[in-house]
Length: 347
Image (cartoon, rainbow, N blue to C red):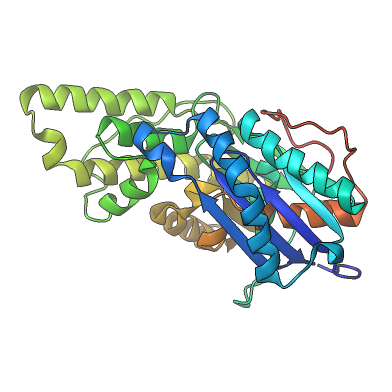
């Protein structure tokens, strides 16, 4: 990626319960600071009001640390990028208003970024591991707690959602299953850990019959709940005795559902570069299976480093960079939005 002048961009992410700030010079990350909110664990999920209050407490110190780690001062910055949405309104407002205030005070361009677009574009961050960046067109399977999408990334980084969930997201299925098993929030990483010691074929679940490239996970959640109900009636200790097998079987089923449709999309669009993005891209089975799928279909596979899987500002910065290059800046009257129907403009 050729970036004239290598602009310095300060990026801010506050869509849910992580307050993050990053500084990028061109497509290289100089700092990427994330402050996670532990307060939600005792409630078994994110409490929106508490999340926005925590963002208000964290935003200034997080930005300060990001600037210091990057060795950059405010007057050296070229632009301010922030997450416009989707996300929790209270959380988004904190990041949006902070970015607007900083933009006005410093006289810098303001860049509004789609959070899901940022997850996809995280693959274009130049890392020091020597891995080649994706070539376009590319298909990206984006999987998180709130979204499950197959995204076609075209020349010029324009994006089209070609498949999405018609009900629940894959990440939500992980978290809800973890909750009924009595596992702490967030449940996804713990299911992944327990699954490593279980049998992925111990229990089977029906594959949803959804047309086209769309997904559905509500039926899987119901099937999992009924399995627990039926088996614990005869054996109250069933869940404790078979927890590892339950986690492994659930994880196998979710990965299988995701990749069945993704395989179909690869054939339809005849791409040679495929990618995985979003918080659930940290799941070990999904990472392994997409590598296998790439070998099967002769595709180059791009899987993000763990630090860019979950919500972070570096991904907002790379999305901001691409908009900066195109001169796509936001008006100071910009407001956050909780939902996007698709990717507007170039993303």
